[in-house]
Length: 291
Image (cartoon, helix red, strand yellow):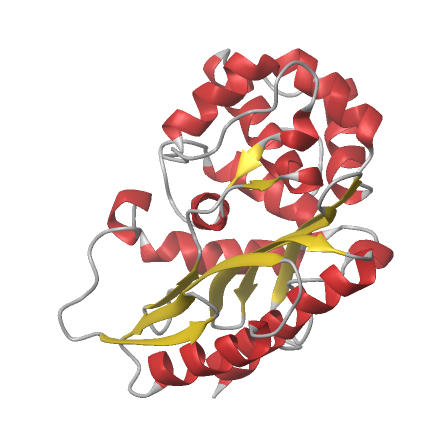
């Protein structure tokens, strides 16, 4: 439909997700009664995890707290794993500058707009979306932002239940205010049956995230299992006040994997420091979920 061949690995991951037949509203419902909840402090906040797998919630909360404790600047994260019915949050409702992770939201808004018009993406839109996601091209993003417009982005956010995300004013898409919780909602949406986007549109988005250029595949994929199909989008933005904004969102599907994460950070003195903060947390998630 959108002029891009979905990779075999992505198809397998999507097939496993679609087979579950769950709607987004079900997947974000109340915690199962038999789940175990645990928390661990980080500064004045807590990492809170819930899981139906015995022992996983306390291990994840403790290990994530250890990975984030003492890091300079501010960070937030959110995690889900459908296989073990696990979720974790740390400052999940705190707002951060989006930088380029908002590009997945822009893509979602464009795909929704095309669906409502009962049309395919144009060849030019295919080129723009490919450059925007796989290369993080800013000019392509600006063109699509003006095509969808903030109102179209807001329409998609409302449908996706991303209630705390605030689109950047005018053309300042990189200053969209996001939360780890909303970014994880987006990863859930892309990997499950939902009326917000068709299976084909979700597959198109995941395929682009699967084909991100090698030099931009840092962050959430750090420590990912070899058998997982990795879908990632990163963002990085230096500002005069508050240092670097460095963010990473990812979904991991296929070969019995079905989980995702969002890790956001601000106040890093270098981009590399922000990347290290994200990857410290990501490695914990991949390792503990594999146990």
